[in-house]
Image (cartoon, rainbow, N blue to C red; front, top):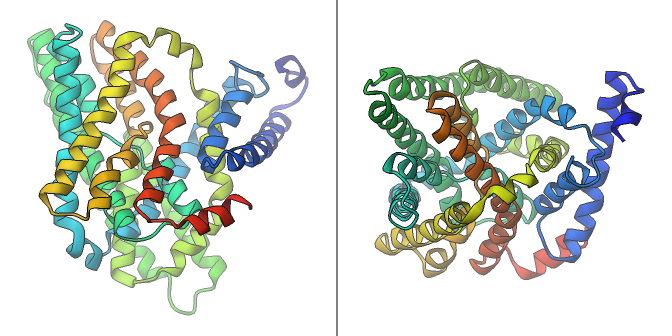
Length: 407
């Protein structure tokens, strides 16, 4: 297939690739609907089938050059998550969400670190690093599953607040652990490893806040729907571009952008407009993720990688349960919130790449292998687990699932 593509110019290859990805994603979701799996699963499987390890239809270098689609998709997703951080909602569940976040993120990190050190005799540096990355959760597949089944209610509000907050926890812990490892390995500590990532992300939060104020002034009552959408997407892309300059994820900044806008305007219509625009972008994001998943790395995952995969899930579940129990949260949320916190990609992979660049070579490479390989498993099982959590928590109703699965 790559020989066939080599006969065409770049524009032809890109257009045919995009067409093949969207069509394959649609076809695979017909199968996943029969199996009662969320659309995200179909998109990821479609990407794996199109990728170099199965049919090898889409040139891998083309997929890697489409990485910007990931930033765009994450920007849209984070903006949508921001609407669940409304002032009245956060006053109602905010303290609970913070406590639950601390429990589910820190307990997962602690259990992973201790297990890696005492069960597998890994040094503390490597164990702590895996524990730091284990604290993060990926909102993309969970958010898309929520939108697909139109899930609503307290469970969804708390879930998305927790997902938004635990990336903040992950960033702080990862920066501290990186500084610790470099100190123990080299005897020197560089403040830039701790301070700069935090400064960049705080700056990104400020940008998100500022852009939301600007957007609220631009979207006057007489502004047409078309121009409302154009202006909102222009600023979202601007935030994503500014974040890429400093090699940080646009997630936190765009969450603040979405949260600030909803709190200053109470304008829910804009979120519906953007949600109507984003399905092709989000499907491409997950298909490209599937193409880029290094299936061969599963062979190198080994016992340590499998243990990391399972122990992190256990830590997330127990931590979420304890956090909910301590805050007297509804029993159904206690029982199923941890099940919706399984997906891990995006932030964790970004931090793994960052660690590979600035850590000693052997530590960086080992960490990258485990994180990338486990991400394959997390992204395959995570959406289905999120759907089950939403069903059993009654955030989505059985009759709605049946009707939507027929579409």
